[in-house]
Length: 297
Image 1: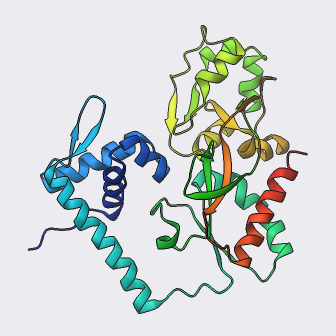
Image 2: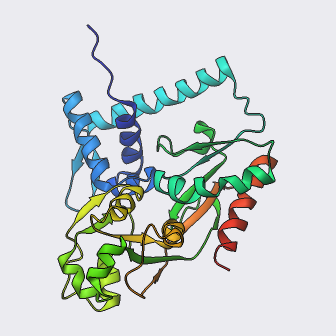
Image 3: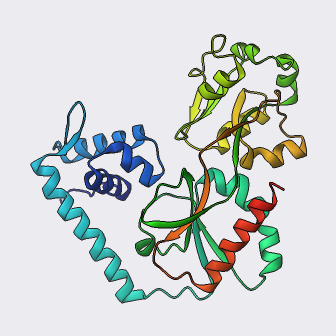
């Protein structure tokens, strides 16, 4: 029997890591954690029975097997893309495709789409929340929401908002805290991995770093899960204002402390540099910018 192929997600992760010769840069490109990249590469190596990377103290290098396999994987993705185009074409009409992280899609984008549909009733969108392919052209993505400091030279982009960090929790948990950050030592901290700033930085700013271990607690790779647990009174989540504003306005969550810490990272709407956005995509981009910046005023 022929050997079963590795999962496509492993192959895409391998291709990104091999191209960058860095698990960290691959993780940034694919919008996953560095540990997720490392784990998928290890699973792929176990499946193939071959070591694909030399893991050196300060660098990463492809083995001979890795270099050979990179050529095969890259060629396979290119052939799959071209074959799909030749057989089925790509007719989107007025459908606009936007890619976003699951947390942003659930907590920011979807609650606001009603106003977009009211303004543009004849324009439909496709939201991709699964990280699959970092290339816009291959995946047919018009726009992408990225989180960082805007260091993507291959893209044009606009920041959506100024971002702030602040703890959020259920009202019952807030009552126990009584506005004293040091009392977080007795609560479960809920982390979202993959962000540059989080609990340690906020605790330092709040003057509670000596009293509270900013690394302990439960960790999640998407922002929606800590928010849901915080709503249930199962911990205190480190929220980003863009994602928790509506939860606070509705009373589902409360901010137990006065400190909202501004951070350099924020969400950007991005599109390929040097390319001409379709009119429908430009409408969605302009709506995103107007709604996001209007929320700050």
